[in-house]
Each structure stands twice: as C-alpha cells, then as structure tokens.
Length: 134
Image (cartoon, rainbow, N blue to C red; front, side, top):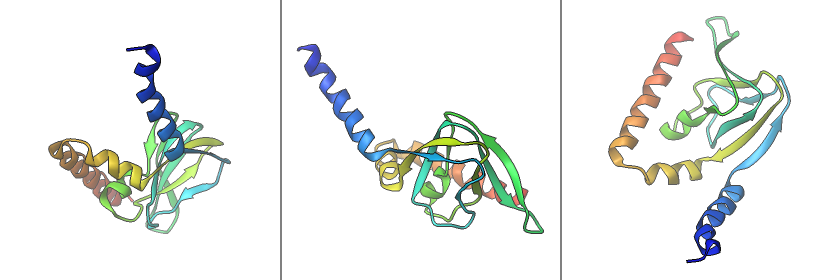
C-alpha cells in the first residue's frame, strides 16, 4: 500500500471536517449566544477568551467562568435538546470553530450507548448546578 493510499482517508476526513466546521472571528464584548435561546451549534475556542454568564436575582449578568483556547462551550444545550443555560460573551477578540448540531449528533451516535448516557447525565447535572448558582 502506498503512502498516498494510506493518507487518503485522513485527507478525506480533514476535507469533510473543513466543510462542516467553520471558523468565525468575534470582537471583544460581542454576545455569542443568550441564555434561553435555542441551540443549534457549539463552539471551540481557537484564540481569545469567552465569559460564560448567567442572570443574577436582579437581572445582572454574573460571570460563572472564563474559558480559553482549546475549550468547548455551548455543547450542553445541544446534547440535551434544551435552551441555552447561560449567555456567552467574548471577553477578548476570539476566533471560534463552530460545530453544528447535526455534526455533534452524528458523533454522539457513534459512541458506546453507556458512555453517551453518562455524558448526557453529566450535562444535565451541570445545567442544574448552573441554575442553582444563578
């Protein structure tokens, strides 16, 4: 088998990923999504920082955590088919990779059902804790 033949599947996978996963530049201060909004995508931070916020008792945004390069956000609402549990705001200028819901669903279907239920359970628990904190 030639090296060209061996690398063809990897090249095909990379080409498919480039078609599915888009990158987007976000300026500092821009809201990426809002708490309560319908979820159709998740994000991977390529550069910059993103604040994950929830509304406090008086309606003010409270920063729950700040995420950095390599971290994923927005995935829980996709996995649970639920509205966004928090608001995401670009703390600094960011470059994000967008992962569409259909792509995530496809990946989730390919994993062991026990692991899939475990991940879904963890996501639900995190949402419940987020709601208690805010």
